[in-house]
Image 1 (cartoon, rainbow, N blue to C red):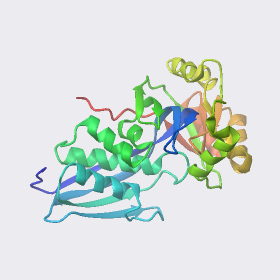
Image 2 (tube, rainbow, N blue to C red):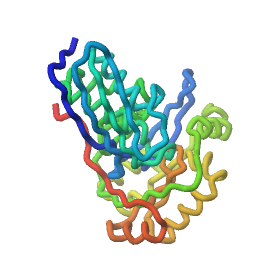
Image 3 (tube, rainbow, N blue to C red):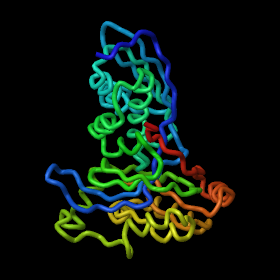
Length: 300
């Protein structure tokens, strides 16, 4: 059993992600899908803070700021705290606050980022009783994007997203905008299943070289990278989301080297040549300027 002698405060950021590349390779027997994606953490972030302290009984209290997301057992941040205490065999009280800045249900992994931050911060606060490999396995039980959000940076992700390859991080200057719409990820997958006959072999070939073309373009950045971005979910989501289409067109008109939907949407982002160009575009469009962020990868 992990012993906790004193109360320990914790505080950290939970970074959003965008998908520079997202394709679906097959439908799995368990109902999930095998994907191939290049995920990139960006500077847009929720703030996670609180305190863990010794107790004779396990207790978790969660407070959500700037959000109407329920702060109960269904919340990913709550579930992450509970999963950590169980995995660390730790009896303690956790007071947890999440200050939301990442839009919910937007394809930016806001809930997954919060869960990953809780795992990382609680592990650090208690002397790292769970090794990084096990922490990643624990993250995968909470959600497909949680392992990536735990390490951050730039990764080529396969399987459900848990098989990751570290990549060089490009110097990205982006604008993220949120349409006036909501998208259900399960519904988006069902639409793709219908479009591609449950992925029985008709896999999309988005561009010559596929994801490897994008991986090779990461070091070049700019226009080379912009030519390789891809998201299969646009086929399933954009026909029913005209506001996202409008924002994508406005991004391109404002000078974006590339503009695309992130994840299962409906958020969209544009890649710009410089921070100044991104800031100018954000004023015209009304989006938020973001840039690439460092990795959380363990130094061990």
